[in-house]
Structure formats: structure tokens, C-alpha cells
Image (tube, rainbow, N blue to C red):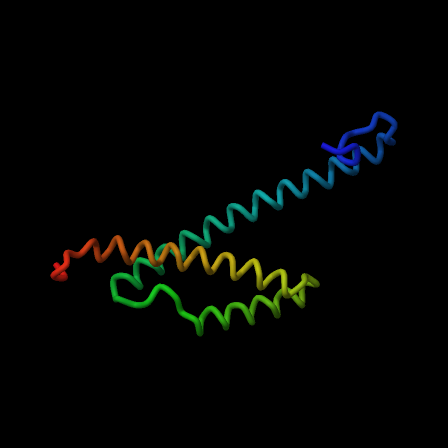
Length: 116
């Protein structure tokens, strides 16, 4: 750990208190993000099962493009870097597709050389 990250005893107690308050807020937001992502993945797992049951492809490029455009607009209105928001959504989408592929494989099961 660098000296920049260590607590120094001569920091004003009011500054320490404000830093602790802000960090508590960050911790709460991080927890909310994790819980929201967990809920999102519960929904996308259901989508994956529905797709697998109806032999639909794991990826939906048109839907993904629409979601990225929508998220970029939301990011702009929230004063968040749209490029960052897009990178985050692309990461999430890649994980969702990976889950959908696994669900499809589990649903169809292994096949033998003659297709059975």
C-alpha cells in the first residue's frame, strides 16, 4: 500500500468523518448494484431457458444493439460517459450470452456421432 492510501493521524476529524460518510454511501451503492445485477441475471436466465426451449439462438444482435443505444441515451441524460456505459453493458451482454449458450447445451444434452 502506498503512503497515499494510508490513514494519517494529522487529518482533520471532520475530513475523516466526511470521508467515512461518503465511503459508506459508496458501499451501499455497490451493494445495490450487486443485488440489481443478480436480479437482472435471474431474468436473463429465464430468457435463456425460453430461448433454449424454442431453439432460439443465444444471441440477439438486434436486441443487443437497441439496448446499447438505449443505455447510451440514459447515460448521457444521467451525465455518465456513454462509452463507459456501453463497455459495461457489452460486458454484461457477453456474460448473458455465455449463460444462454450453456443453458442451450444443457437443454439439448450431449449427442452421439449419429446425432442421438
